[in-house]
Each structure stands twice: as C-alpha cells, then as structure tokens.
Length: 308
Image (cartoon, rainbow, N blue to C red; front, side, top):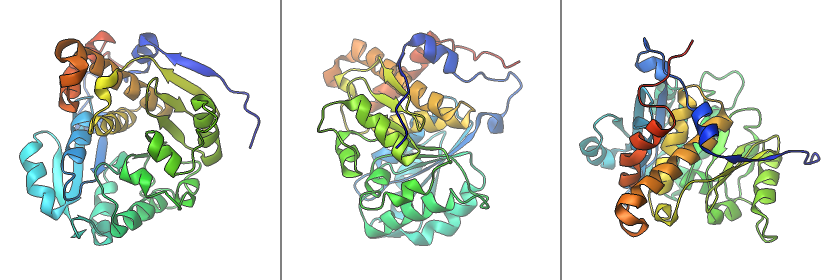
C-alpha cells in the first residue's frame, strides 16, 4: 500500500454550495442525467422506492427503477416521477434471468444505483457480481459508474475481488459499520478516518462510511468529514435516500467525490431541517426527502445557477 500523504477536509455549507451542479437554463431531461436503481425483494419494497425518490427530488432528469415482477405493481402505485419496470425474479428476489432487460436499460443510463432492498438470495448475489463485472470492462458499452448500497455491499462478503476488478472505474460504496466490517473493513483500532482511508486506497473505490460525522474517503487517500445530520437519520430507509441522492448528483455531472460528499451533506442537512420540525424521534426518511428543497435553497439551488 502506498504511503498515506493525504489530507482530511471538513465539509461545510461552502463546499456544498460550490459542489452543487449548475443547471443549464435550456437543459432537457437528458441534460440532467439518467439513473437506474436496481433493488427490491419481497418484504423490502420501500428501499428501492426511497432510493428512486431521493434521485428524483435532487435534480436527476430521468429515474428508472428495476424491481422483481411481483413488486412492480406496488412500486408503480407509489412512484409518480420515477419509472418502475418489472424484472425476472426467483423466490421473491431478482434473478439473473433479468440480465438481458437490465443490459438494455443500462445502455440508456448514466449511473447505476445497485442494492437497496435487494435481499440476500443466491440469485441476487450472482446478479450483483455480474453487473459489477460487466460495468467495468474497457470494451463494454455498459461502463457506467456504480453506487453500491445495502445488499449490493453485502454481496461482496467473500467476493471482494468483484470490487477490486472495478479499479479505475467509478464505484461508490455506502456501508454502515456492520456492512463495512463484513467486507473486510477494520475498526478495532477505533480510528474511523484511518479505516476508511485504507479501505478506499486498497480497493480503488470511494467509500462513504456512514455514521456520526459520515466520512467520504477517496482512492487517493483523502477523507472528507461531514458536519450535518442527527440521530433521526438512524432509521431504516435513510440510507436508501442517500444512495439516490449520490447517484442523482453523479448523473448530473459532479465528480464522484463531489457527488458522495455533497450527497452526504444534503442528506444530513435535510435531516436536520426535518428534525427541527418533527423531532428526531418522529421524522422518517420520507420527511428527509420532503426537506430536500429547503436544503437545496440554502446552498443556492432555488432556481439553479446557469452554466456558462
């Protein structure tokens, strides 16, 4: 491993304001990016919906949502702006038979968000490995950036080579501590900054290590420390919203590091606004989404600054 001659940066409102992608006044849906969210399994219908909603409400032009066929009607009822479509399934989760349809949809998209509510089934795990591989090959038409969350991360347990094979491609992982330990992260020494930095360097990825003062670590060894958020975000579904946010910002043209760090800041700031009105006890991930407009306005997103 190379020497750690990197830096630690604190992410405040100024960073968020500068990282927010500018919007062209004459832009169209394609201008603002296309995200494909893949997830869902029986018992986990909320996760993909929340991820898609996070992407929709942070500026993405088009959001597609691929879910098991048995969940499609549920997602179609809930999603107004995102576009759910049914995929082949096995035992309530996605099957590798879904791959032809996914390849076709991926060819249209700019970013893949993989994992929310995907489940632990063997077929879903194989699907994750196949998609990570196919979106990393130099000669493939599917070489899109990947935001990997939840069960997409769990699928790396014992198969970290699927992540290592993407070195040189944009891969953003968003684990909590348990998921981080499951894929080989080291926290026993108590130094989260060091742990995040070493993992990101070792595996050539951007690591968003969630928790109090969420960390964004880069393959170069830099670490960005977030300053927003509260305990009300420690609820099921909150991380799915963050996944959608990061994927959306990446699709809109930010750098991968900016997408991760800004997504974390916006997620936390919206959480702070939701808690101020509803308390950390009562707020939900949907309330975080509802607070995103106010968080965006605070950093200059009221009308969207023009590019030029």
